[in-house]
Image (cartoon, rainbow, N blue to C red; front, side, top):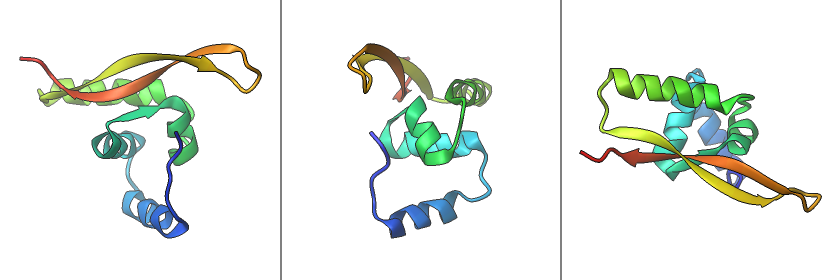
Length: 97
C-alpha cells in the first residue's frame, strides 16, 4: 500500500514533516496509519533501511517507558514475477500490562 492522496495532501505532508528525523516521520506514519512496510518507508520518505529506523524507535520507546511498542507482523505474497516473497509490516500496538 502506497501513500494515497492528491498532490496538495502530499505537499502538505511534506511541509508538515520537513526537517523532522527519519524516526519522527515513521512514528508520525505509525500513529496515523497503525503500520508501515519497508516499501512504504522508501516510497513515501526515501528511507532506504527501515529496520534501522524501527530499531531507533524501539530504543526511544524503551528509554521513555512508553505504553506502546512496535511489533513485526510477517506477510507472504508474490512479487511482480509471481515468485513467493515474505516481508514484515511494522505495527504500532499498546503494550499488554
